[in-house]
Image (cartoon, rainbow, N blue to C red; front, side):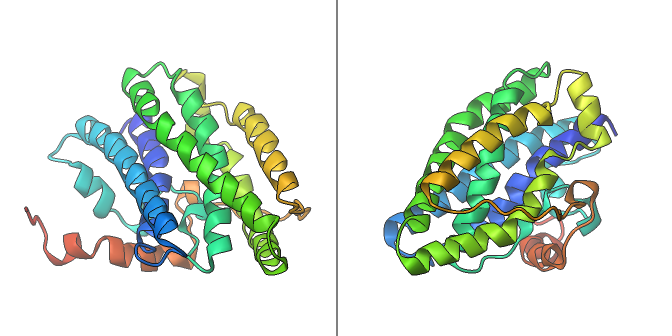
Length: 249
């Protein structure tokens, strides 16, 4: 299979896994407006995933579909970053996870608009308006909670402290990403990190949240090495396809 096919999986998997995490929250938001917003973000991410996987299915052939690519792989075949698969806990944790991903996702889409692959560029162009909204939504909530009550500040600080070691993987360049960058198809992660750092530092400063100084970093997701959480997530995500093979609506 081509490097581009693998790159499409890498791009789509993080959005799909995070989209599923957000779908678990439907009906559980702190208020109606926020509940609907989180559900809509989930739907946005799944829409992006469909575009990636439809393109990947065309490349793979052999009766592959967006559904077979999404649902019929084994855990080690998924290439999502570890941040995306972390489970839902309290609301501050959910917002922190979304914010840290969104701050990476927007500059990624901005870079992919310039991709030499026309389809990748078109997907990024179609997605970028949604991703801008995602980042604005999560950034405002980080500020609101961080600079809110004593309890909300404490919970947001704890969430950032816990999730921070997962963010370094976002910018660890795999051989696949290096090859795609060289071919002008993929993004330059070092360039993305400059924009990411500027936005994250600015928002956390407004939120009165301290940036963790730990040198420790989790990694492995982009190479198929995941936390225990992904297996449980996939058990839910893949259930219908596994229980009823070749089911058609």
